Length: 283
Image (cartoon, rainbow, N blue to C red; front, side, top):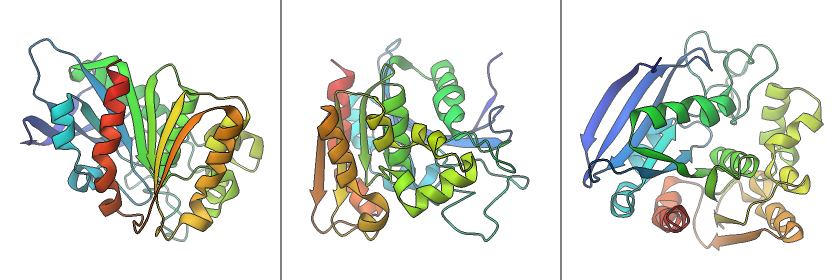
């Protein structure tokens, strides 16, 4: 039975429709909100899909309002999908201390196994199974042509999902991703809280570990601001560079002087990433 999807808003932009939608998720047990931009297209045409995963504290609104992707997507004929970062609702558990890096807004794109998070925090299944089914059913989406990108925690999600499902995603890129969450405090808190103390279970959600364990894709694109406050302690792109070099993965790592961790940085290089994705989605 088709999922009932409610339109929260829909506006005309750059020769296309930008919508925000809501549905009751069986996977998370909550209502989930996501945004979709669909450019104008010929009747019957099916368009490739670019997934964008957001970072800590964000919802789908951050990139929708500040990502500056619509002009390029309209030109290139790309559907752009942005899910939320975690389940939300009165019954959804949060960090006990109200910290920003765990709980609401910080789902880390994993399926939690630890209580009290296991019931709702199932963002891996939501992003890889439930939401793609909705996109395929409700939009003119060519699900044989998908790619994925993300920012920070969402960059971690894009890398780990893309590395795990290389047959699905024809391109993978990231802005300032957490490349080795097992080796930094953000990731250790999240993976321990959601998945427990067995670090072997963490490796499926750590891009560097996945590559060390044999995951392979032809190439990756990563942009990283050199003025990013989180660069040295939490992001550590050199670890990804080292893993890719050993594995023979063609990593384009662009260190951008003067840029920080914000959407001023992301929006500056968004078009570059979309053109890179489009070239691989239309081969």
